[in-house]
Image (tube, rainbow, N blue to C red; front, side):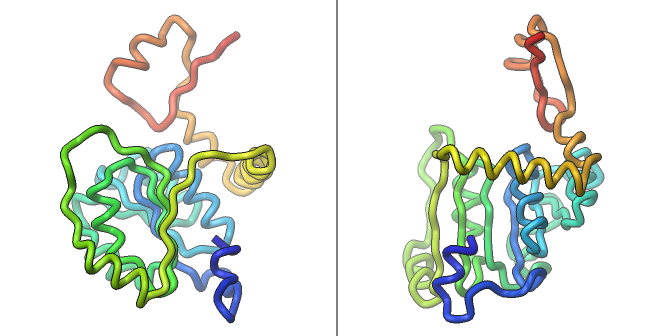
Amino acid sequence: MWDIQERLPWGKAKAGSHRAVVLGAGPVGLLGAMALVKAGFDTAVYAREPAPNSKSCVVEMIGAKYFSAQTHSLEALAGAVGNIDLVYEATGASKLAFDMVQYLGMNGIFIFTGVPGRKGPVQIDTDLMMRNLVLKNQVIFGTVNAGRGTFEDAIRDLTAFNTRWPDAVKSVISGRFQMEDHHDLLVGKATGIKNVIKLN
């Protein structure tokens, strides 16, 4: 984010002056929200379930704001947040993601991390998207691969998260299970935020 923002003549802005929206409150979304709050972003997380729930509690623990799709449309979310400098997509829901692109602010950055399943085509207003990308000086990119340095950064970030928000980090792992429980975890109803299978 900062490397891209530094293409602008004013470079990095002061902490708290940037606004970010995270789409999705799964493990990737919550860790992304922690990274954004740590970096000084005023951060909002947008997810399906109404608050309160286990995910909204984690969002509140780290000092971010939680918005539910059941109470806020994307337009209402954008109105509540203000100029959106960064969108961190962590849902894999292409329609939601591309609907959100239209609310990306001036000089904004949109990061895709989700991989959609094979569904039908989604209609998007390509003229509006192209116009905004050019006239609002926006950047859209996807990310998946990571080198050694990225993993080292992640370890440092997790250490910092755990120091700053130990309860929130602990809450992301909502269950620890034995190997023999794998079947229910893989094909049963999803519960909690992130379940871990213990190998010892």
